[in-house]
Image (cartoon, rainbow, N blue to C red):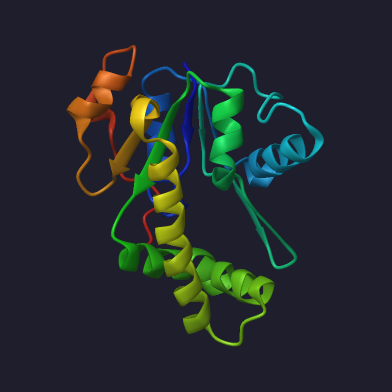
Length: 187
């Protein structure tokens, strides 16, 4: 079973990856942006996204952030679903304002700075407004896409209060919630 995280970073991406790794699954988390770059290239060239990692069960934190190149692999969720129709897609989420604060603290502000330069903005506040808007747009797009019969392929993981019973109902192995631990928290 493939599990593909399609929410933003700073929403427990590393903790989710580690949680599944502790259940014996092969995971790939961020990989210095290689996951995101592979997804974009595969989509642009008609290839299969994430094909270089056939033994990986769980993909998370799929982004490449640079002031001249932003590739947010999770935004390709439609293409990922087309390539992996039986996968479970996880929309990891949290309070949007806490997410913005955490994202801003990531890399001691360098992360925000890279996005600000990429967007061509003058201030962090403009970047935060854009992030907030993109947050809601992405959540809406995911929920609209995975509606009706496709809803079974989606688990919305509120990292502040996970619904373990619902997640268990979507997996083909027994969960041990004692294996959940917060990792890499900045806010």
